[in-house]
Image (cartoon, rainbow over all chains, first blue to last red; front, side, top):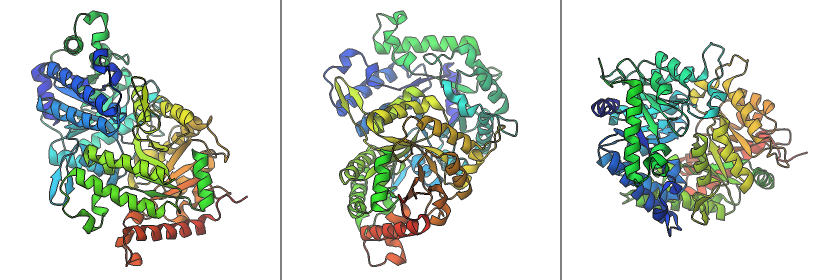
Length: 305
Length: 305
């Protein structure tokens, strides 16, 4: 699946991922009116997502659906999550389920079935939340990751493992130095390269990617050098303070190597003065184009020789 | 909430948590017949859980509901998860949602609302999956944990942070030594003590607990000494190879300090020769009593002076 994503990035000249972290409060007031139940809120959230997807699917290669923003509306929220995943897929987008799942092997295999594989019931196998890619947390080590890697190989999927996260306190653990001279995030990066080594595609990147925050350019540069076969999912652009200049170190000499997420910057663009006069999905589209130009000017042409 | 759990443990003389990791294949054949959809599977899973709960709620203080086993059945599975959480609560059990959630602050706050707090819609605040306690992963550091700690304080809840997990490969990252001489799991333990320090209850344990696997007695003993105010959620007993003798180091001189989870050992007890002639919920009850006796003989009386 990583090859498909890179191919789309080159074709569209856009390494953007639109983050559908759709908090109900992000919706315009007229869409929120009269809503008093999870069921109604979930319907409006999907309607909002659908309009965003319709208006960006021809210019961005991927969306990232952050499941926490759906879980907070109970199982109705999860229904909206599923509708969003399926609709984005139908519109040709590559769908990253941002769930950061993690557990021991037997349980990780359930999560993997839920997002990357199929669940067996009697003689039937059914997809639960059919994403293309999934974020996971590697704190439990190899046997918590292997079930995902199996499904990746069998079903043409990808995962992104948390390596250096975008949040301010990410260094509390991740930037501690080990006795062997490496930082914890570098050690995690090493595990990630190892987990992906049998799945390297035609652009030289494996199906086991890494989450590397745009807000930490120094660490990102070290990781890019250390992990030549690992594709990065890069959160933290925009609302969290990461800029195109800061994150360009995540990309290789061909202008490849990462996909950059923006959530609030796109979903809530309509609230900003620079997009006044536009409704929320027109503003989202305009913000995507501005983001594309910003990234292109820092990274350069994607897929250059 | 940790005081309520400890109080129940002392009253029942049982530090057991029944793990409702209810894979559909755990159900007796006659309950699985004719099921071909997630909706039907989820209904049967809840029916199974309900019968387990009815037959153990007077002898065990808590259940742990492992959400991966529900997510694999899509949002129908999440409905069964919610029904299970609510039913267990109604029957007086303390409910641990085993979700190992983790993310940056703004997103962690959505997860916290989902399991420990309430979600605001207009003027209303609604509970999504109302658990008493939640497992979380601390790889992102303080700002990914603080939203949970806020809800803990406001709503009388608890969390358990992964420190030393029960799986075979947990040492790949967790047992690496830092430059400061500590192991990563010890460093995580230190963060956990810090996160919990304002929430210490009448038994000396805080609302921010730690997940410490029964399968790693050496590490568990170090953590118990290092973390005097941290209550342990102890997985790995039974099917994963942990024994009462191995995990007794998690307990203090009063016989307090932890709750021990068993999932397959109880849910699938009816498949074992020693419980033959019993149906699944009778076997589950018998297995709980055997587990209680096993733990009591190793740990001794709970709440002793």
